Image (tube, rainbow, N blue to C red; front, side, top):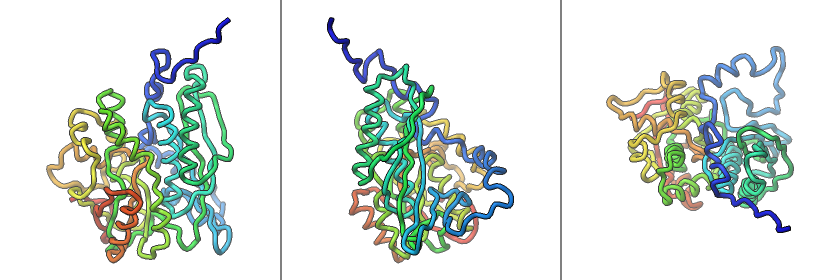
Length: 359
């Protein structure tokens, strides 16, 4: 009797990964306003005193928790997982792993190990497909110099993959999202538009060149965060993910009690995303983001709906947003450019006040 043929990873018998998920990548995030309501009464038990070693908790919606171990080391702990943003299983694994590790870099830390989080519809996807997802994650972790040392798996209705990531940083070099100061300049490490590209992919109108650009950006590790941490003039770091540039800029502004002013003309965009947005390739998460935080955003009169959608566009494995002293801007840009982030650019400033304004 002949051995049964293996089901190929891409065939009519195997569903597209994105067809199995109701939302892809960081567009799966619960909208900021809804999340705030959920967490409102569940942050910490009444009367529970947080340990002084907890340097960063949930107070300012920062990218990761940080716990001081000793005078020289603090532990960074974070987790990120989501449903497919692309159909290629290997690429999905790479993107999800890159996105998860980014939170350690956003705190100025160096990752040391990861745990895998895997939920897969076992009766729907071939084992070869699931294996390719995990292999993609493993290869990114190898690039980051860390092992996947364990994890947890479940049989789920929708495919889910991500990581728990641990890292280390000197306690004096922790870069919170709440450290911005009036007079700072803002630098963004990657261009915007990943959500637009993912919407185009789901509608099957994304070109091969657009797909290649999307994967290249979302699998580019935010390693410049390690080199930015020792710079005293770097006052705050965060990464732009599911809440879009406006949402994460607002978290930075709220955490520091300042106003963020974004120069829309200087914000880098992925080539072709404005046209795709004009053709209707906009995620539902973009609209939900605006409904959640739009009341705290001041936009210029006459700003096109497409521009607002791009400002709210959910980024998966997006770039670092750096708030630094004006005299350190050249150093910050040089770090980005040396490490292959050629689109890094100055996108605004920090001033006294509150909220976010766009000009």
